[in-house]
Image (cartoon, one colour):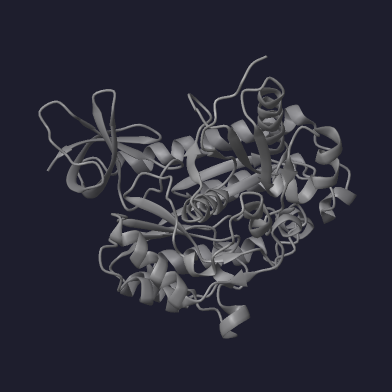
Length: 437
C-alpha cells in the first residue's frame, strides 16, 4: 500500500480570462498567504502543489471552452492522484454552477464571483477586510491592474457580464489611492485602471460620475509614473475625463473605448444607447481636446441580423475613424442575454471572414500610423528581455494587446521595469523598432 508523505498543503491559483479575473486571483492569493496558507500564482506547468484553484472565465464560447478544458484536465489529475483537492471559482462557476456540479463532480467545490469568503473557509481562513488593497501581483513588478469597480449596470443585449458580476459597485477613492500607494511601494510604475465600465465610476457612492476626481487623486501618488484607462463606454461619456487626462501629467494619452459597431441598426439591436453619429461626434471631441491621444477599441462582427450592408457600414466607420488600435470579436450567442432571443443567423464562416476583412483594414491603418512614428523619440517602459532584444512600450501602448518597441540588447544596458528614451527607426503593422536616443 502506497503511503503519502505528510507535507504542508500548497495551493496553485490558475487564472483564465481577463485582467479583472487576474486582480481577483491576486487578492485571493494574498488572503490565503495572510491566512498562513502557502499559495502562489501558476500557469499549471512544473508545479508541486497538491491543491489547485481555477479562476474561470465564462464570457464567450471560446473562453468557456478553455475554462471547461482546464477543469477537466485537473479533474483528471485529481483522479490520478497527482493533486488532492480541486476548486473552481470565477465567472463560469458563477454562471453554470449547478450544471458543472453534475457534469464534473470530481471538483471539491464551485464558488461564484462574490464567494471568496466561502472559498477561503475551505482553508480555515477568514476573509480579512483590512487586506482590501493588498495583493500578491502576478504581473511583472513594474505594472499592475487597479480594479476601480465591480459589476455593470449597462444592458448591452450581447453581454452576459451582469449575470456573472452583478450590478455596478464602485470602490471609494480613498481605498483606491491607498492600494495605489501599496503597489508603488513594491515597485509598480504603471497603473492600468479597469472595470466593466470606467465612466460609470462613482455614480453609486458619490451620486456623480467621479472618474476625473479619481484621476486627480491617483496622479498625486508618489512612485507611480503612468496611469492608463481601459474599458470606457461611449454613451453619455463624461467629457471632464478629457480635462483630467490633459491636466494630470501621469495619465497616459490613451483611452480604451469599445464602440462594438458602426451601423445604427446593429447598435440599436445591441442596446448600446448610442448612434453611429454620436460615436463619430465623441471621437472628434476627444481628438480635438487631446490631439495626440491613442484610441483603442473593439468591434463585434456577426451579430444576429448583421447584413453585408451593415458590415460595410462598420468597415467604413473603421476606415473613417482610423483607430490607433482595434480588436475584433466574432459574436457569441450567450444564454440568458437579450440577444439570445434573436436567431443567430450569421454563419460561423461568415463571422470569421468578416473578422479577417476588418482586421486587414486595421492593419493598413496601423502600419501607416506606426510608419509615421519613425524618427520620433518616445519614453519607453522596458517590460522584459527576450531573443536578443529589450521589449518595451510607449505610453500609447497597453501590455499584451498593443504595440511593442524592440531594442537590440547587444551593446545596450537597459533595466527591466525602468524607462528609456528610444528613437524609432523602423516599424511594422504591430511593432516598433528603436535605438537609444
